[in-house]
Image 1 (cartoon, helix red, strand yellow):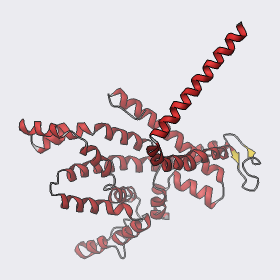
Image 2 (cartoon, one colour):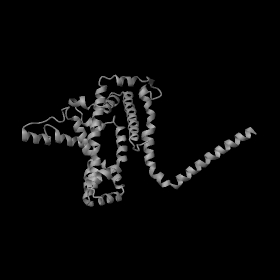
Image 3 (cartoon, rainbow, N blue to C red):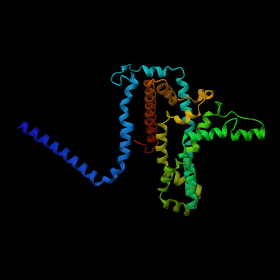
Image 4 (cartoon, one colour):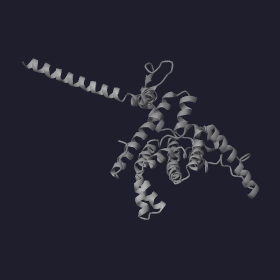
Length: 321
């Protein structure tokens, strides 16, 4: 009797699981076109994000490409110890954090302000033209941006130095002075990507209930009051989510941008974790230390996201988790 009862219980569990799978499959078939649209994104994350994660084991090995992952010697946390005891570790940390904090303070608000300004334009054709103009720099490569920066700021052919020399008889070494490097990197990012960053905010603004603005007009609210009391609170959750995601990338600096702008005179303020990993992992062939740097950056980014999300929820926002 007891055995029969156990068998019937197991059969019920099997039937329950089977019915769940059938319901799941029926939902997939019902919404097959949505899943088809999701498929490229899912494949992207699987192939380029999740599958390569097995390679993190290289950070704990003295990796030899000829021996492979399974044949390389296991060294534990030796590469992390080398990284943290590296003479210029705190210089790398300072440069990475300062560039990112400057970007957070100076760059992050610009797309919000631009989106608010574009939303106030009533002439539709003029609005579309302006959107296209501010989007355009995003499609330029960093090589082009670095070239434009050189022709604007270099001491010999730079347009700004030519103007300064003709007016005041002076030239300023913008590209070879460590005083200007962080500002140049930040303003390059603003010029290139601020317009592109308005897309999400414009979409969020488009979803605001128009009846709120109509009620505000009846109450005599000015356009500034409408922006401050209706538009900004309505898109606050979007701003918070993007801020949290931005904090998660605090250890990431545009590698190509930094590498193109580096020169021996600004190495003390321009050398970051990305360039260090490139020098060690690619130029010197020490793949393990390069992977260790990437893993360290990922852990710090995860901690930043979790901390920022917790603070966001403490202050009554939705967060991302």
